[in-house]
Length: 240
Image 1 (cartoon, rainbow, N blue to C red):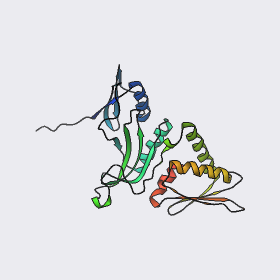
Image 2 (image 1 turned 180 degrees about the horizontal axis):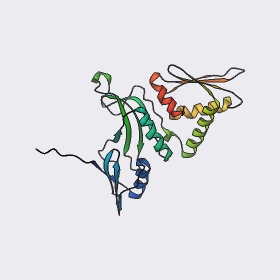
Image 3 (image 1 turned 180 degrees about the vertical axis):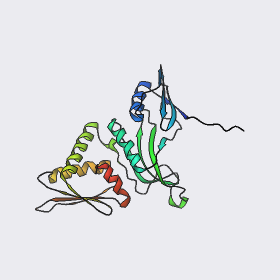
Image 4 (image 1 turned 90 degrees about the vertical axis):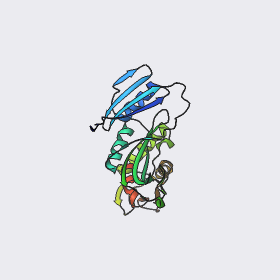
């Protein structure tokens, strides 16, 4: 029997508005559609090889039985790289680190398209976990490391990102076993500014631990942790 060489996986998604979806997938995939017709578009993705079609169904009420879609990559660094590309394109991302999904431990980040279809980019860190480790469903973790920027309006998001850049630039960083410590000159970043930053950061990253020292004199100290597995997540979030 002749072996068949498959060329690409084909995925066809029903969408409410093809123009809105073209804009999303152009930003998510970083390429232009290879074909656009009335109520239809096709993206010819090379890496990974996927033939992605969008079919306009204006009466579509909600996403169908599809659970989610994903792209598997080789490393957590690759997950962070794609997340950064998505964020730079204006997409709202949601992170899950060290999460148990489909009987495997994974690092991943998510976006969702205008019709609610969720896409993940993920790396498998440990596969074939036993059922006793509660790894059956996607995506469940005892303590998921999630960065959900949808907790903010676009204006709030930009203000928080600007405050994060200011904090990181002005602080002196020390690496800890389970995270990082930041020493902050109160003349550069005041206690009130730090309190506001913490209130916002805990909204989008609720799984992290924050410990603050506010001495009467001298620098402020902020410790950010969440376990040893959280360190790469924290480093990516704060652009260390």
